[in-house]
Each structure stands twice: as C-alpha cells, then as structure tokens.
Image (cartoon, rainbow, N blue to C red; front, side, top):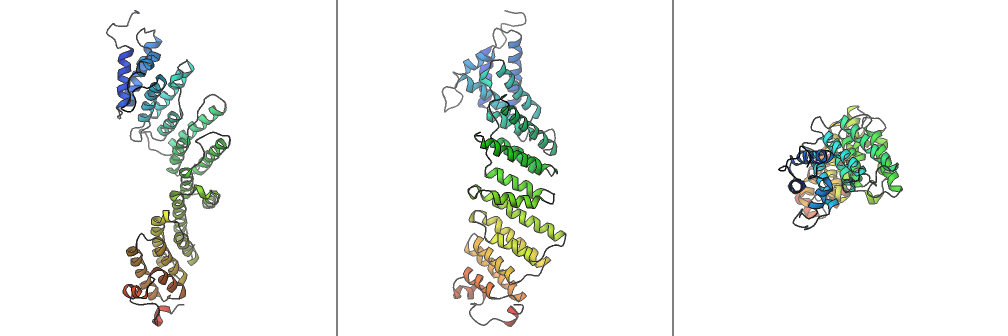
Length: 391
C-alpha cells in the first residue's frame, strides 16, 4: 500500500454506496456533494490509490438497485445518473451554479477522452448545462446570461459539426436559450433568436433528431418579436406567423399574436396614431380566434372595446364586432348574455343600433322571448329614434 492510504480510508464500495444514495435522494445540497465526492475519487485515482477507482465504482453500483422500478442498472447508466443528478441540481433555477455545471461537463468530456466512455455526456447533460447558464443565482437572469448561453450552444453545434462531440442539445436546450432571450430587452435579442431558429431548421434538414422547431419554439419567437423595440419587429412577427404550418399552431402561439396585436394598438395610442379601423381590426382578430384561445381573446376584445370608447369614436361595425367576440368566445351562456346586455345598452346610448348590431344580437340571443327578458326589447318591434340616430 502506498504511503498516505490509510487502511480505514473509504474504498470503492463506500464511495459507491454514498453516490447511489445521493442519486436516489436529490435535494439542493446533493449536487455539490456529488461534485466533492467525484473530486476526491479522481484525486485518489490520479495519486495511484489501489482502493478507489472510478471504473470500479460503476461496476459495483451496477448491482445496486437505484429505484423501486429497477433491480439492475448498468455501469454506464449509473455513472451517467451520477453526473446528470449533479447537473440537474446545479442548473436549478433557485440555486443554479453556472461555473460548477460547466466544470462538471468539462470533467465528463475529459474522462471520456481518457477512456471512461461510461461518462460520455448525453443530450440531457448538454440541456442542463444550458439551463445552468440561464439560471445563475449569483447574478440576475438577463442579458449576460443570454449571451453566455448563446455562446455555449453555438460552441456545441460547432463541435458537433466538426465531429468533436457525438450529441447535441435537443430542442429543449434551444428553447431554454430562446426563453432567456425573451426575458431580456437587449436590442440584439431578435437577431440572436433568429440565428438559433435557423440553426435548428438547418440541423433538422440534415437529419438531426429532436432539434426541429416545435410549437414552444414558435411561441417563444413571437414573444421575442413582441417585446422588441425595433421598428421592423412587428413586420417580422407577422411574416413569421404567416410562414408557420397550420399543424404547428397552438394556443400559446396564437395568444402571442393576439397579444402582439393589442401591444401594437397600445403603442399607436401613445403616439396618437389610432383610428376606428385600428380598433375594429383587433376586435375582428379576437372575434374569429379558435376555441383554444377563446379566454385570452375575449379578454383582449373587451379591453380593446373599453379603450375604443376612450380613444376613438366607435361605429356600428365596432359594436357588431364586439358582440360577435362575446358570442363566439364566452365560456357559457350566462357570461355571453351579461356581455351582450352591456353592449346593447352602450349601442343604444350612442345611437348605433343598426342592422349589423341587430343581426349579432339576434344570433347571440336567438329567441324573441329571451331578448325581451334580457334586453327589454325583442328587436322585432319599433326602435326608439335615439337608438339609431347615428346610422
């Protein structure tokens, strides 16, 4: 036995049992404990310890049950689990440790090159390191985090295309970085996000699996466009949305466009650029939203309607579109009828009870008896002159 190795010092079995226990019971302290133990193991192995070797730890733990569902776990799976567990904790949003996660990934690559194929980083490891770059507790999650994460993911892509690494982050990793850009208002955010989106498309076209943009990716892109201060951002958002395949549209993506439409309206209000067409366009977009976006669309329609009464003069079309939105998007009959009654009172007060409005009210409240009960009028009898004075 070499000098410095006590007969009572922990051996491979001891370290294996501790690591297995840590992987099973993950908490906020586990990751750092794993890092410390792996450091000790590597140091002992490098110093020629005859009792502690990383390879042997994998072999011994291959016979340790890691979960109630698994009575056997391979050497490769166990060592990957050790490193993944550490990375998962180090990337946690509440106590992320960017530098330790980076060091852990670097350690995995070095061990792989030295013959430890059982710790070869997988896609999950790369995703977690990207998450750590965006979740560093030692600084606000903002511009620097986004730039660092962008640098990391571009480095992974470059290494993959040069054949230096065998795996890439999945779309989860790409979406993590896009989320980071969405949380910053940096003027380069749109440019960086578009760069990542093009890379995802390029890799996917080359047959790389699990990197193609999905519905989450699309909604993140639209969100980034909606928050951008560049003048051409709104045009890019519309162009991007129009190019999305209908099969890739989802509730979140459509909500982003509705939110963007209302955001543009607010900006126009600040600059006093709005007219009745501006408000009616947004009301129309909300009214014809699909069922999955109905709650969000109805909220925006009512908000737009209230702003219309303040910033512009509504016309008959405005009231008709607001009524259509309430009829199409309300969650139930009680909600629909409440909104229609409010709009009926407003339209009569402002003198716009014309054919378009009557048509929408008749559609929303089909029977004359119910209209009489709800509105106080069947809409088939004579109207007060003041109700239609502006038609």
